[in-house]
Image (cartoon, rainbow, N blue to C red; front, top):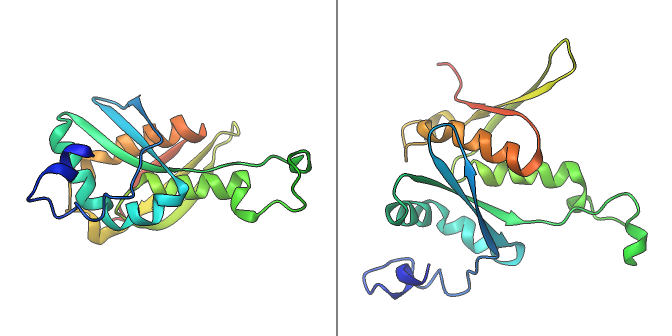
Length: 166
């Protein structure tokens, strides 16, 4: 981030002022590694604005690696009153945080639809259908396996990402 901010020709310079990274971890996808970058939730709104351009810039620096941006969110369990809270906000429930992580993982593209498939033996697989107009931009097609591996690592849930059949 610092290298991009320092370059005089960078158009991201003003937007990167307040952006901080809380952590980064590597996840093994099928044939390449993915770097999951966690941002504090407070700066997530500004990261969303420049996410597409920032991913492009950082993927140039990290060759052969996919980048996925995720906000650092807190999950409060059922006994949240021990923390001194009267009510648990809906945004801190497990379901809500996992939904938000799913939206974060797919990056600049949008989620078009979701289906949960439960097989006979009880395993659940979530099919996530991405926006068809983003199919040809920014090699999203190549990142579908990466999205699946990262989501599995972060939430321990199976998900299959796909584009709708035209």
